[in-house]
Length: 99
Ligand SMILES: [Zn+2]
Image (cartoon, rainbow, N blue to C red; front, side, top):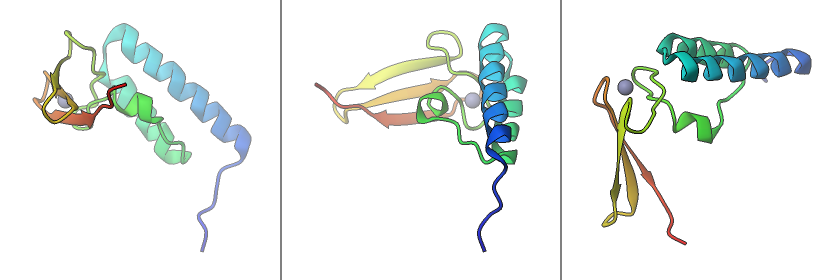
């Protein structure tokens, strides 16, 4: 059985709300806006874009701001970016491609 999808207008509104919440989270530096955005995304089957996901800590929902809430290091040996959340000490690795 297929999953029931919400009507498109609802998804559109959900996306807008997520956008606003992420903006608020950035301005006020509060993780509760992010968990709220995630909840809305789950309810309406709206996925956060890859770009946004990389800016969020999966563990504590903190917006990862370089030098502020996270530290970024480049690992040239393994060609990846190492992002460390300062709040919960989670470490994320993302590969990068050199041009
Ligand atoms: Zn974290």
